[in-house]
Every structure is written in C-alpha cells, then in structure tokens.
Length: 225
Ligand SMILES: C[S@@+](CC[C@H](N)C(=O)[O-])C[C@H]1O[C@@H](n2cnc3c(N)ncnc32)[C@H](O)[C@@H]1O
Image 1 (cartoon, protein in one colour):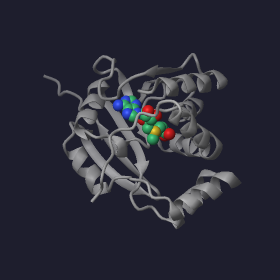
Image 2 (cartoon, protein in one colour; image 1 turned 180 degrees about the vertical axis):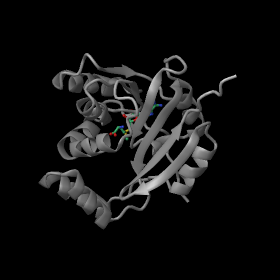
Image 3 (tube, protein in one colour; image 1 turned 45 degrees about the vertical axis):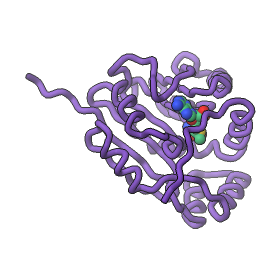
C-alpha cells in the first residue's frame, strides 16, 4: 500500500533547496528526458506543469529550436528561478515561465500540442481531475507524456541510468547513494494504470523503463460528420 502525500508546492525556502540539488547533481537528467519526450510537432506549443525552475523546458527548447514552451508552477519562487534559467539560456523568445495551478489552468481549451511533466505525478492527490485538466488544454491529436520515478527502483538500475545519461562524478555518487539508501514515495504502476483508466485519454499507457515510469495518452481527434 502507498500512503500518498498532498501535492507539495515548493515555496521559499524549499524551492531554493530543491533547486540547489537539482542544479548541482541532476541537470543531466533533463537532457536525457528531452531525448525521450516524443515531440510530434517540433514547431508546436508545449506545456510543462509543476516545472520547478524549468530545466526540462530549457533542455527541450535547446533540442528543438522552434518549439514554444510554457513552463509553469504554482510556486511564485519557482517561477522566479525559472525566469533566471530562461534568461541565462537566452530562451526568452520561446520559453515563458508563469505561475499556474495545474488543476485549474488559465489556458483556453485545445491550446497545446504536448503536455509534459516530470517527478510530480506521485504528488497529485486527485489524478482524475489533473488528467481532465491536461486533456482540456491539449489540441485534438495532442499528446501527454509524464515521467516519474518507478516505485522500488534499485541500485543497479540507478547505476545504469547514470551511465547512459552521462552523469558527472558528483551526480553519479549522489544518484547511487539514492538508489541504495533513499526511499521516495513514488507510486506503483498499478496505481498509475488505474489513474489513467479514469482519465479521458486515448491510447493511455504506463510503462516502466529502468528507474522511471512513463505515462502517456493522446487526445481524441473528433470524427468528421
Ligand atoms: C517534485 S517537484 C518537480 C519539479 C520538476 N518537474 C522537476 O522535474 O524537477 C514538484 C513541483 O510541482 C509544483 N506543484 C505542486 N503542486 C502544483 C500544482 N497544483 N500546480 C502546479 N505546480 C505544482 C511544486 O511547486 C514543485 O515545484
């Protein structure tokens, strides 16, 4: 059984601590995620919800030079940090950081080609409501791609990931320590499957890949009359 926490909003000073260890140890993760994310339309519009300081959006924007990205978080301080990352990477013409509650987005229906998110699914207290909101803002034919940690990942899987993602020595050390000793309240794939089954997404799947799990789904294209 998994005891699940309320969604955590990373306000100051928690935001700074999270950003410190992400920046120092784990930036390579986002380059790997950017390689995994299926970008159907490289000139399209992407939404990242719960983006923290926006390293995933920045990595994706570097890889796809014509993509437009909205990098959003409920924490004002995370949005502040995200804007610094955008300025530092000279991405202000294509990446926008803004404060948004992922349960109640300010965007119109059918705005985005792709909705992404990393490491937040296990915090969602109401996945059914969250999926419905993400579905609403996707264009017909648009895709959702969510990455989260896999419940019970082990040391060997973490070591293999560090090798393929090209982690530096500090990142490798910390990730291996985490793989061996740290328990994070990630949810099971069974839980993810049942959450997806209650969502409006078509072709919804949850697959395990090493230390991660991927949740995917697409928005139906209305049939022609
Ligand atoms: C574990 S962090 C993950 C951040 C980032 N995606 C990453 O890969 O590092 C979860 C983030 O979700 C944000 N968050 C929590 N509840 C939220 C909500 N309802 N809407 C938007 N963001 C939320 C938190 O403020 C935090 O920055």
